[in-house]
Image (cartoon, rainbow, N blue to C red; front, top):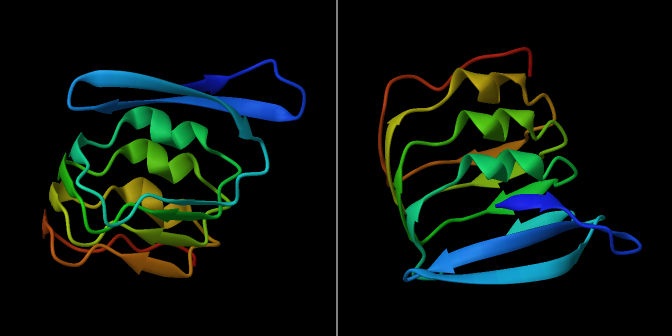
Length: 123
């Protein structure tokens, strides 16, 4: 879950669920530009609430054991310049919503179980 907090200068809190244990991190600075959680043993699906990180410019979840589909909510990250989901176990199609990310310059989903074309947009 990602949601707003009332701490001065901080907008987000995050709860990470690892091996069934929820850990709440509060006071994530609102000017978080990059989120790099690569090279961990994270498993499970990427939650739709990832789309709440609207100010983020770089997201790296590569080299984990993430499963399921890429959430359509990533299409709400309109400032995103780099997205790396490579080396996971993601399945399904790449959401068409990603075609609206006009700032996206780096996009890596290699070494997954994805099918279908890469969506085309105006970028």
